[in-house]
Length: 190
Image (cartoon, rainbow, N blue to C red; front, side):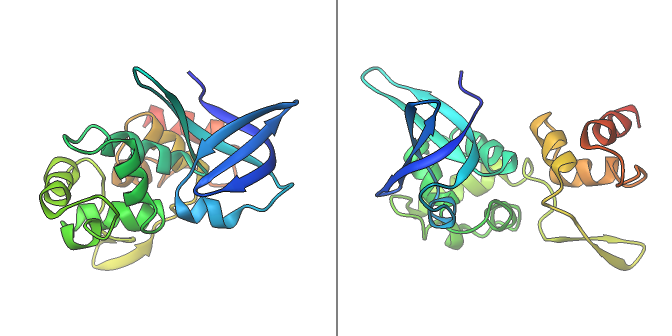
């Protein structure tokens, strides 16, 4: 399995990019936001999902580990294949899609190309309890604190199976100045 690819953007076309890694070009299909954010000759890293089918192999890439994990959750839903999952993730950031699912906003999901009302409702029903906190904010003692959704330690805990809410809660008492790996270890101990 190819977990991630780091290299230089050699070409862009449709919703795919080709990343040159030591002279080998990897074609990766990416969500719209990631496609628009990269330029030719940029050095980038994408977390990848290697999809194998009977007659084809495809790489799907994501600029964040959280987006990759959400993609993997989406393709577990009956009727949602990699292309539909990518279309859903192209609706906005991974956090916006996660929030829409957590808030049972199937109308938002139906905006994705190739995703009908029934499939969108199935996504919401199957994944609402798995995606974590339904908004960017979490209430604690009648005050609101902003959650840091771009934190690498949060992404690492999500990759280990934590929900966004559980990952954020586990990191609450951990010093944010520590290296990411140390913060993750401390959170896992708690």
